[in-house]
Length: 153
Image (spheres, rainbow, N blue to C red):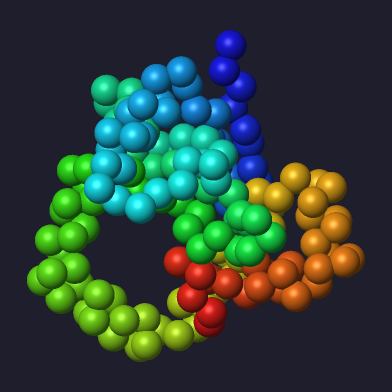
């Protein structure tokens, strides 16, 4: 029986909660096919955050630390169709447009990134979290401050 993980992160306003499930038997092979030609590291994948209607992973959730270094991607889009759609949007200038929107609303962007930092810290198991908080404070702070995609805000 597959066990889902439940995470609750307190942010501004109401708490954020989400579930993710461990990778299933077929998920490893599916991820290999989905990520073909893209640089990926399955060792950081904690589980599946979103599945498509056919049961394949669409978004996986990744560990916030790999080999003692912050891993920048928390939610990794794996669905080839959606990856392609994002690439089309990027090629049409969506990134500069998004940057412009974010610059206009810096307060909201900072709040969003702060919440993302809380999610990253919540994904740490209790013992590693305690070690980072007490013995590797600079790494703890990097995880706390690092926003979406590892961007500092």
